[in-house]
Length: 414
Image (cartoon, rainbow, N blue to C red):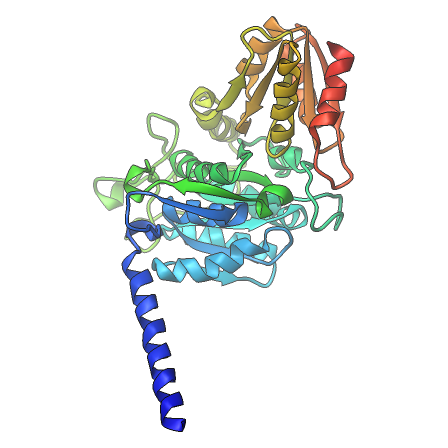
């Protein structure tokens, strides 16, 4: 019997080893695990899709600290990054995590971190450093209810203005908001590309609902993705001027350790990176360029989805997971013969002013649905410029916005 048990044990070990080898043989370039074909279909949650999207986009460094509802991201990164030659660090706090991301990006890596509102608050000083020194990186905010510790495991959209103005001073902001598990993947890839192209931190604003929502998705194969790399210097290394902008206002970025010499200083600095606080013309030029390199390309950055707006009398403006409820409310209203449409921004910053203005010219009212007390509703009013009425529907109790809440507001304005 003992011999038989040992034989069975050996057979089981052999079977497990073969299984691991088979799984390993299905791994392809860029960290994307595929199952025999050009793409793969699988059931996954939003946080997992963010991890896979980051790896597919070329992220090879992650630093963070566990926090609900984003913890799965660091857990999955600790497993996935070593598989593709990357590194994952759990730091002592969120401030250190952001600093580590900046260091990795300066050394040439595509780098990211993830947290929720309280952790994002702690990161802000170093985010400002990254903005001023023009360090590309991805910052994922899996939003939850606040302020302070707030609702640690429940969804909200209360950090929208934090993403825009959490860093002090005039500065550019790019922030994307997915509404599905597949978009968690797609917009993560896009966020990394935008950070590399414009040499600036980019936010991905998910929430607790999307983080743990599971959907069946088909992910693209690595060769199907268009990836962007930061601009690189060329020519004699001695002639490198680290902050001399290229034709798109973005200066080429050399990796530390490659022989290029540059001085990353968070003070107002000249093209060589040295402090120039006593030179007003340098301060004016630098801050304007930091903002213009994003704002002048807003048309290329901003993405929106429009549904049933051609004949709409009323439009619903909604983003992230709330847009799912809004889309159902719009569908239900149209089934009753009501002329209602949906404007869903995938890009929250820069704000889609032109899309909102176009809609405001055609409808009599825009209903803004948000899981906060009204943050983007003020931006919608600004962009509408009085062309139509703008009202809001809000929820802040940690529960999901429901279609019936949006429908009730629509009944009031139709």
